View 1 (cartoon, rainbow, N blue to C red):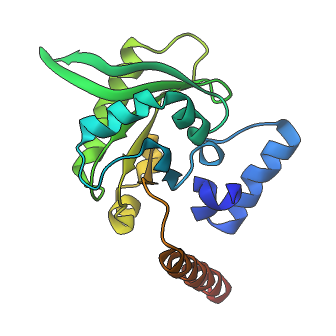
View 2 (spheres, rainbow, N blue to C red):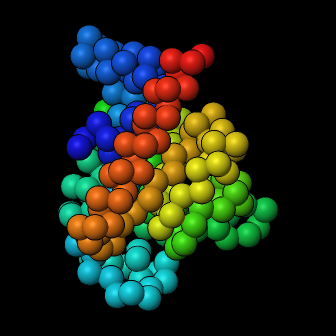
Length: 201
């Protein structure tokens, strides 16, 4: 399921093929091959009702498992990274570094659905990291907003890729078998529609 769970699976087929070919020919990883969607965080053992700080604490308690779920190449840097902007304190939830991408990865944890306002918040953090924390030879930082649910139309309209921001859902409990079947059918239907649209165009 690696291909299905990476952001590359949501790209048009030609672009996905190109990135996979680059990986094969040049051993060059793209961010879309690194970042997954969704992330399965059932090992956090969260109760039905929890807050962002509970999610962050659970991740730090199970940091090794979380890094394994993020994927190969991630290194933990800092939690609650403090940034002073216009004499105001801002705190980034989690900061990682990806060795192959050679860039900082800013992770913001959010409950509920993705909101358009999250883009501005993470963009601010990325520009601050770029100005104050980037080392020589590193690529520009990249952001990952982890939400319980995505809002696909908003995400598409905001063109987050141009801002170096990824959005992924997280699942804190395994889905019941019937719900999993339903989700797989939805995924197949949407894939079929994309293929049909490409053929028509």
